[in-house]
Structures are given as C-alpha cells and as structure tokens.
Image (cartoon, rainbow, N blue to C red; front, side):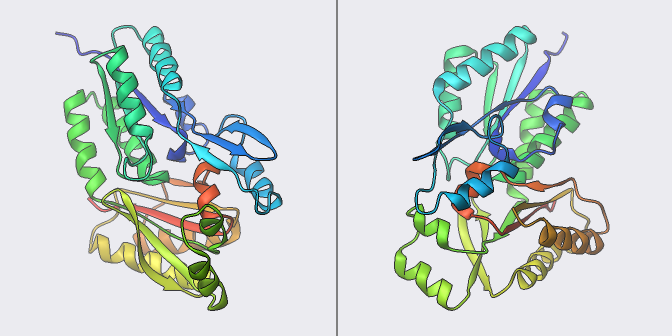
Length: 286
C-alpha cells in the first residue's frame, strides 16, 4: 500500500529560519498581536520582528495583547493544505499547551476536518518547537511514516531545553505576569532572570547581572546537558540585541563544535512578554 503524503503545519512562534517554511511546504498559522492604540496584526505575516520591537518600545505602558489563532484560522489552513495535497496526512506541531491554548484550538479544528490530522504538543517555544519541525522534515525526506515521526518527536521534546535571559522585567510586569514589587526589586538590584522551559512551562533556574554572564551560563548549561555528545540541534534567538546574540552564537559554536541550525530574532508574540534585549538558546541533547 502506498504511504500517504505527509504535510507539516506549525504556528508563528516556531521562529523558523527565513525561507524555511516556504522551501519545505510548511503551513504556518499566525498568532495575533493587538496594540491598544495601534491596530491588530498577524504574527510574522503583517508584523515582522524587525518592525515589532520599535513599536513595542514606543507603545510605553499601552503594550499589546497576544491571542491564539482562532478555530477558523486552523480550519482554513487545514482545508487549504488538504486541497493542495488531497488524501494527505497532516502533522500539526504547536506551542506548548502549558503556555498557550493554541494546541487545544488545533485539536478542536482537526476533529472537524479529518482523522488524518495529528496535532502535536511540542512542550516548548520558539526554536525549541522549530527544531522539532526541522526534525519532522528531515524524517519526511527519509521516507518515515507518521507514527515513526511522532514517536521520534516525543523523544526530542523530552530532550530539548530552551533557555533565555530577560534584559528587563518591565514587560512581564506590564503584561501582568509578575507583581510591581518583584519587578522593582529586580530593577534596583539589576537582576536579570534566567528562565527555561521545563515540562512545557516556564521555570526560573538562575539570575545574572549582565548579558555576558547569561551567555556563559547558557553555554555552560548546554555543555552540562550534552556531556560528551554534540547537540542534535542548536539555535540562538534574540529580541532586538543582535550584537550580543552574535557573541552567544560564536561561543556556542566553539563549545559545541558545530554550526547553529537557527539564528534569528524571536517574533512579536514571545517578544511582547520578554521585551527587547532577550537572549535565548535551544539545545537538543539526544
């Protein structure tokens, strides 16, 4: 029996390298950003990262709100993919269910469209999810079936760490995710929290006083996770701080003995909560 074609769907928080989705026929469902005084946008479609951060800074206290794709967004995407590739299977890889309802909306839409749509919770964000998309594409090119790909991604999801350092607590406070006292305390002491995604949710694991300290902490943590292995995938993501990200890239490539799989700027949805100056690194340690 001939295997069905498999197509990949993901969402805009995957922070895939420029052109990657188009090259690999990946459908990307955008999340939404709504500025109280500046209109609504589709993440990565009509609002790119390079344009977003100046808008975020200019917004002051009137910071944007983010929202998941609607069920209609997913229905439209799934139908379009199945029209392009009749009788295909769809693997739909999304932002952690512990951080967003995006995956549950995808599951609801999938149930209406076809039993051949398989929503997958990446249990991660940014390139922590994006590298799972890359792994799925790699296996597709090798001829793997859906079950084998999903089994592999479940293993990848439990062996991937995304870590990042916030340059400011201002946007977590403005977004209502931390209290005023915590934000003020961190600002006075010049404390920059280091956070990673653990079991699909954010968890603080350290504090530093400078981005340079954060860079070394991330590289050290990556080396600890890897032991004597090289990473399966590694990426560096930043929010409007490319010079420091270049430093992290150079240190990571030297430490891990390989080139990055992804280097770029995180989009508006994640950037709304983390703010400019955020540095991040993802390591898959299979």
